[in-house]
Image (cartoon, rainbow over the protein chains, first blue to last red):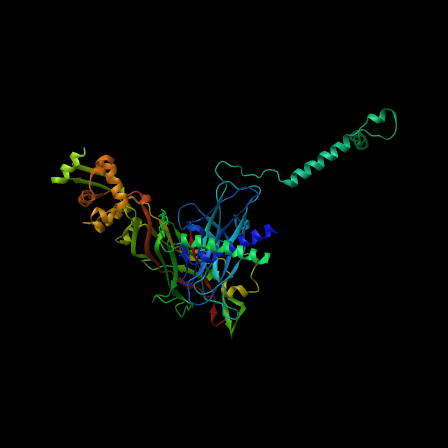
Length: 217
Length: 333
C-alpha cells in the first residue's frame, strides 16, 4: 500500500512538473507559425546513447503558438545524411533507426498557447550497426474532421542521432532466452549420456547416446 | 482517512516539485537563488511558407502559366549554431469533381518540378550573438599610483582574457559572400517529384501504398558557417558596437573586480579603498581579442528562398481543375 501511495505521489509530481514545464519558453525550437517542437531539457539535438538490445526513453516538447486549439501528430520517419554537411538530409524510407522508436502519444490536442511533453522509447536491436544511426521525429498538424485537405502542409522535424557509447560492444550479451535454451540443451545431453538401466550385461554401460548412434547406423 | 492522507501527501509532493521546477524556469529572484548562465542561449527557428506578397501560402494555383512561385522564409531568433534543411514533397494532382476528387484522373507528381529565379536565396537582419573576451590595460598616475606602490603594487596594470558580457552584433549581408555569415544559406535543389507523397489530398487516394518514400526536394538549407572571415567580420562588428564603452559596461562587475584583484595581487587589492578600486576599474582600457568559433554562441537572421513550382500537364489529361498538396518540412539538423 505504501508503494502505491509513493507511486501516486510520484505520478502527481510528474504531472505537476509537466504542467510547469509547459509554461517555459522554448529553447532550440523548430517551429511553424502554429506550433513547435524541441528536445526537452534545452538540448540542441536528440542524441541518444543506445546499447544493443536495451530500451532508453527520452522526450520532446510540443506547443501551440496560437489563440486556438491545435492538434499535432508526431511520427518517426527514416532520415539520412549524406555526410557532405548541413542540408544534405533526406527524409523517408523504412530503414535506419525509425523502427527502433515508439512514441507514447502520437496525436496531441493542445489548448491555445499550451505545451505538452511527449515521451518516446528507443529499443535498440541486439546487433547495432556501426557508427551513428539516424531518424527524424516529425510533427504535423491534424486537420479538424470535415475540413478539406490542405494545399500546403507545413511540418517540422528534429533529427535524432543514435549511437553506442564509444568503445562499447555493438552486440548484446546473451539474454534469458539463450540461457534457458542452453540449460535445456544441457538437460538433453545429461539425459542422453546417462547409463541405460534396462536389461543386463554389457548394455548397462552403453549410454543412450550410443544407442542413438547405433540406431542411426 | 488513510486514503485522504495519501492523496494529501501526493499533492504536497507534486506541489514541492512543481515549485522546484518553477524556480528553475526563472521565477522571481530570491536570496537563495543561484543563477547559472548556460553556455548556449537556445532560441527558436521558425518556418514560414508564403506567397510572393508575404501572405501564408494556402492554395496552389498554377494558372495558365502552369507555374507557381512562392517564398520560403526561415527566421532565427537567438538560435543556436545548428543547421537546417527545408524539404518539399508533392502529392499527385487529382482532378476536382464537385466537392470531392476523382482519384482515377491524376497528373503524376513527377510532372511537377521546382526551379529558381536568378537570385534564389537572400539573408536579412543577420546578427551574431557572441561572448567576447577582453585584454585590459591601465597606467595609473597621481595619488592612486602612490596608493598602489605603497601597498607593494605596480602603476601599470594588465588584465588578460577577461570574459565579457554577451553581445549582439549586426552583420552586413553581402550576397556574394554568404560563406561569411554565421548560418550560410544554401540554394535549394531543382528537380521533379518523381515519387508522390500521400499526405493532404493524397491521403484519401485508394491507390495509396502501405508505405511510401516520396521524393523530397530541398528548397532551402542552412549550414553552420566556419569561414575564417566570419570571425574577422564578427570581431569588426563587435568592435564597432562597443567602441568607447567603459570596461564596466562590457564585463560583469564581479568578473571584472576578480580579474583586477588577480592582476594586481590580493594583498595590494585588499589595501585599496572601494573608491580607489572603482577608480581603477573606471580607468581600464579594454581591447577585444580575436574571436574563436566557440565564442559565437548563436545567431539571429532571416533566410529566404524563392522556389517556383512548374507543372507539365500530359496531353492525355482530361480537362478540368486539378489539386494536390505540397508538403514543406523544416528539419532541425
